[in-house]
Length: 229
Image (tube, rainbow, N blue to C red; front, side, top):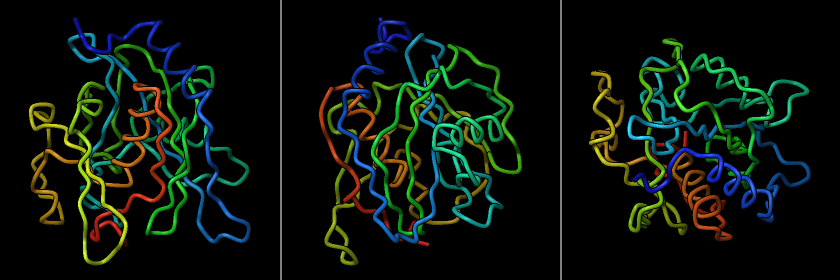
């Protein structure tokens, strides 16, 4: 039996926890951060366990090419985070979902590269047809929620460049058997077992809030230096 079976019960439980979560909007007055949104998209894997969609960015992208990422991008003029996340999900993976599929949003996360990211949690179909956009996505994976909810999945390390702890998430190479052959641009990405912030930060908060019903903040968690630009 999966730890988190793809079911109406889990959907309703996660939605209720996110709705009750006292969310922080971290955009101060006069901020120059650009608004962006990412989609934490929940589907089922081949074992019936609820999983999220994780992509490897196309290696030729000018920004963060080859890195792990959630579908997402900047807000267009007049868009809210929910609409932006749904649009980016469609543009990157060919997955169309309506607003009724949105379970809620988590804390904004400020990045070193000048964005304020709003994570939007989306409950998709169990086995949706995906058509990755090759201009943006090199590959896509279904990572079981039990992986990021496991004890010890979140690791915190210190670096000399910042007083804040750096977060990374252990996901395990066994979930990445479809990975493309492109060489990641940074040595730190040769170890395929880990997701780094900002993706790691927002997924960690989702696991804490949606799966464990804990009030956990992540906006002070640091990114590794290679993700600062």
